[in-house]
Length: 343
Image (cartoon, rainbow, N blue to C red; front, side, top):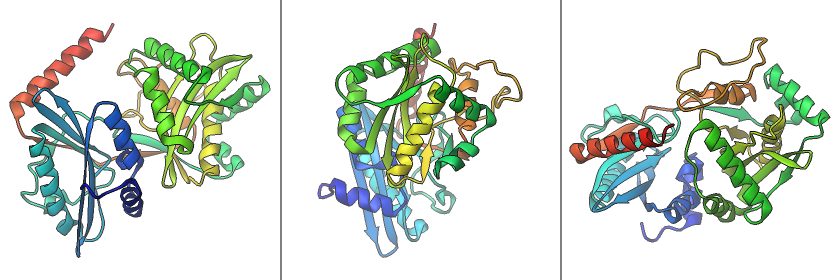
C-alpha cells in the first residue's frame, strides 16, 4: 500500500508479534540488494493481515517469497482469505512463477479452502530450526550454557581475548569481510560483497552491532547482529583460520547477548541449526572440533546449542506454483550452479 510508512508498518508488525525479517528496514535493505518489495496490509472488523513480499526479477518473470510471514490478528480464518487474495494479486501483477511462504507461526490453512493453491515447499530460504537464548543476568546466561562453553569463556578471559565494537567503515569493516572470506573458503559457501555488510550496518544504525574478537592484536572472529522488537538476531559471522582460538567465538557471542539484553531484548536468535540433530552433536567428553562443511553442519549445531539456546522448530513452508514448468527449470538451473561452484 502506497500510504504506508516505516513507523506505521513496524508498529503494526510489533503489535502482531512479527519478526525482524518482515520489518520495513529489512525490506528496504533487500530492495537495495536487488529485490523488489511489496507490502500488503488488510484490515477489517475480523482483524489485521500483513505480509512483506520480496520479488526477484529474472527477465520477464519473477520469483516471490514471504520470509517469516504473513502475520494476522483477530479471526485468522476470516482475515487470511482477504490477505491471500491481495498477495495473489501482487504476485500476478509482477508475473511471479512461484511464491514461497515460510510462516513464523502456524496458520489455519486447512480451514481456508481455495484461498491460494498451496503445496509443500521443496526448498527453504530461511532455516526451519533455530536455537533461541533467553536473555537474563550474566550469571544465569553463563549457567544455562553447556559446561564446555563455560570452560571456553573462562579460557578466553584468561588468555586476554577482548571483544571490540566495529563500524560500517574503515579497518573493522574490512577485517570483518576478511573473516567472512576466510570462513567461506574453509566451509565452502558463498558470501556477499563488503559493501553489502557495510550497508546493513549503516541502514540499521544503533539497532545493529558489529563485534570483533581480538587475540594478541589479531582479529580472530567477528559477527553482526540486529535487534527488532524484543528479540536480537545473529545475522552474519566469520572466524580466522590462522588466529582463531578456543573460546574466542563463545566470548564474542556472550558479549553480543549482553548488548542485546542491555538494549531491551529478551531473546537472542542464533538463526539456524540443522533440520535434524547430527549424529555427533553435543560433547560428552570428546574435545575434537567439528566442522560445518557443505551439508555437514555438526560443528554449527554443537556451537549454537552449547550456548544455551532452546531448539525451536518453525512451521512447514509452502509454495504456490503459477508456472510449474518454469519453476522446475529454474530449480534445475540453481542446482547446476551449486554443483559447478562446489569443489
